[in-house]
Image 1 (cartoon, rainbow, N blue to C red):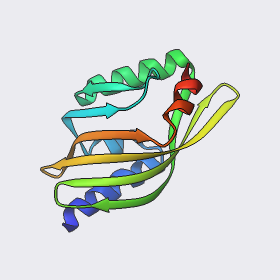
Image 2 (image 1 turned 60 degrees about the horizontal axis):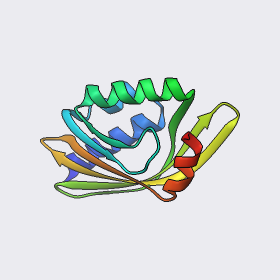
Image 3 (image 1 turned 60 degrees about the vertical axis):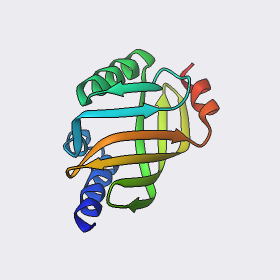
Image 4 (image 1 turned 45 degrees about the horizontal axis):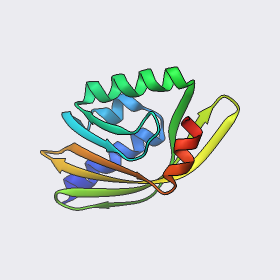
Length: 129
C-alpha cells in the first residue's frame, strides 16, 4: 500500500531530522507503546499524551536524551510496518549507540500500536540504571 509506505517514510524522516512534533502527527491519540526491558523507559504506555509525559519526565529525571541516528530498513505492509533503527542515548558524558526493531500496527493512516525491541536490552538497562 503506497499510502501506508508514504506515511511511514514521512514518520521516520521526521524522527531522523529530530522533529518529534512532525513525527507524532502520524501517531494515533490512543496509541499503545510496548517498550521491552527493565530500564526506566521500558513499559507499556497507553495514549500519545501519556507516553509523551512519561518519556519527557523520565528523560529529564535521568538527565539524558535518546535520538534516532539511522533507519537501516523499513518494511511496510497493509496493516503492519517494521523499522530497523540505529539510536543513540546520551547521559552526561556517556553515550550508547544501539540497534532496535520497531514493529508498528497501522490503522486508518496512522500508527496505532508500537512494539519496541532492543538488540541488547541489558546494555540499555545498565545505561539508564
